Length: 237
Image 1 (cartoon, rainbow, N blue to C red):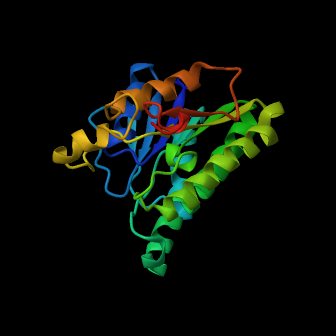
Image 2: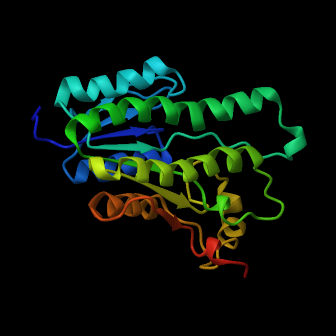
């Protein structure tokens, strides 16, 4: 364990986008503190699993404390954990709202506060939210009001935090995916889902991981939302 090794914290890391982002950071030599509710230990000594509900403040604190105790630093935080519930807005229940807010907003709030405290001591750091292109380009028939409400809030606070902490050496950005080929989508629906993008295909996990890696290296980019959506946000087609 080297105190000079860079460290990324990744939430929602057990599969899909989170797992792809973890892999990309490891390829760049970062140690990764990974979190999801039921995350299993990794055979890679530099992928440290901290399982638990990120909406629990104690779990969020443990993530950051683990990074500091093992590696002495937090270089990057990837707020990837998220819950997506699709239904007409009037059919959402209070329980739906609580679940989505707990992960999408409370989880972001807790872990970002703790990570920022360490980044301010270091006078450098990078925070990235994984949002959705739907925040900028809604799709008729895709009823995701709670997603828009929470992920739209994350996009807005990305710009706010970028300005708030720019002079302290901390960058804050977001990546807004389109529909990505992950285990949550039925393979029989792939052709239909791909057709919802001007480029005619679904995105791949690697497309999002590459966008995150671009932002990691882009030292003069902050307050940016990078749309990785096959052209969805550009307009109607």
